[in-house]
Image (cartoon, rainbow, N blue to C red):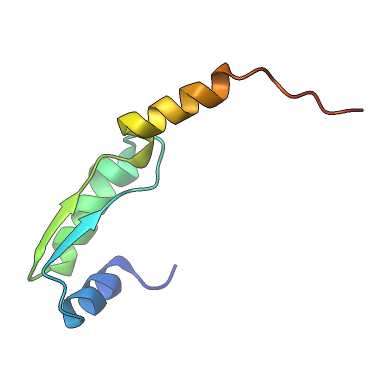
Amino acid sequence: MSPSLDEAIAQLVAAGVEAIRIVPVFLGMGGHVREDLPRLVAAANPPVKVTIDPPIGEQPRVIEAIAAAIAKPAVRSSP
């Protein structure tokens, strides 16, 4: 996928960004978020502070939205 994480960080730094917040669009904390993402951020050697939030699927408002969607009666499709 383009740009790569290190390319995206470099572009943001070149644009004058002083801090970067990464919000992984995953439902849970799997290997990519736990292991790969921190390794990729470290390899990019960013000159600014980079924080990695919990995956979007583990954030309370998203969990509440998913629970509300599940609680709604199912809509049946016609055959």
